[in-house]
Length: 513
Image (cartoon, rainbow, N blue to C red; front, side, top):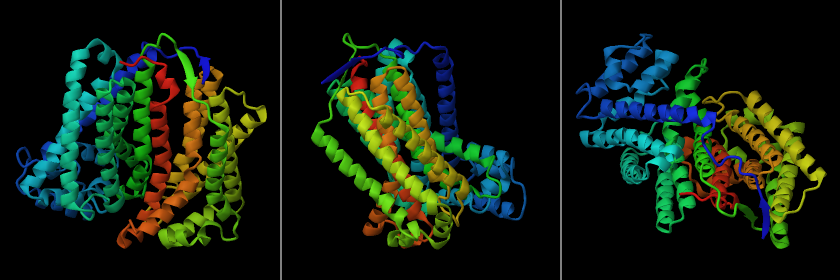
């Protein structure tokens, strides 16, 4: 076992930054809870403001189509939730209520039976309970000072989470894909969120029974991260409405779909890191990293080289990505033409080489860190240079592809997010290394290494979706397959990095209670 003693740089949360950031986090989460409660009461048969909601919602849509500004009207107040009205004020009546917006979904909601409206509205209103209880659960100062209240709120939070996800599942099964807002990709995303919450909260419960509080905290943070897809989504919708230009609401939502789960996972990781760092170090705060054997190192190189070839080989062919049959089948003609006109030629080859070098040098440096061996300066330099080149090219492609549209599907959102992640993880790795925090350096290096597999995962996901026929042909022609493959390729590495951190040697240094 390798051991290194590290400085305890974040064992308290009493810094000036954290003094103001927690009230801000609470304001955002509880504020969203109020908006969710408002949306539920607007839809609920018991508290709704009208008995003919479907007709009123259709009237709002028809009037908006005719160019009438419906912002602030009585009809809108009866059937449109407050957060959507705020979005309309930030953009336009047509953006929020018109074609390719939210109103068709509102019409469907109010057309449902009273029982189904009650199911969905109760799910919405439980958001208030989840956000309030969840915020207090993860506020370190509150948890330490009010232990009994923390435990009571924990029970309330878990019951509300299971109840909310049960109601969500009933609604999804009853409505099906066609009646889910933004159809297939959004429908799949809701199931992923539901499953993520149920699995995470269940694993947190198992860890608690085992009195493994560190893992209990980690799984709860991940579960709350999945729940935060709801407020983060509304924040994204509101923010993007101000820069949408000629794009419609549903087109901008393609971008939201692309970034949402990564945002939520990193938000959950931040909660975990802050709560872990607020805990006292153990009596022996020695970092015990498990070494990587020579056999495992060789296996890692083989696996990573194979992943690199998945992207490198197409980059070496004359027609590049467009020449792959799976890409032709899974990506519609318009986005495929747009994609290959940007992601092609010399930049594609340079990106493939940079990613290959990044994968191999990151694995080398990770093995060295775990084994207590100092990396050669050349390895470190190659890691940094390859990460910078890969991030810069991804950001360049994202800029060239631009915002998503119905014609260009995911457009530049995926590449832009990948570039930002590579740059962020590289900067965090450098910071941890400069501060001598070896355990945190291992965690950030794992995030960087895993994110470098995203290009290969994108093609692998396309192959898997094509092989299984998981995307119905109706939605495949609209770019849902490419969009889903992109989202999964970026989200999966970040999720795995989070879980590795929960079970890391760095986490074991803290006495979490």
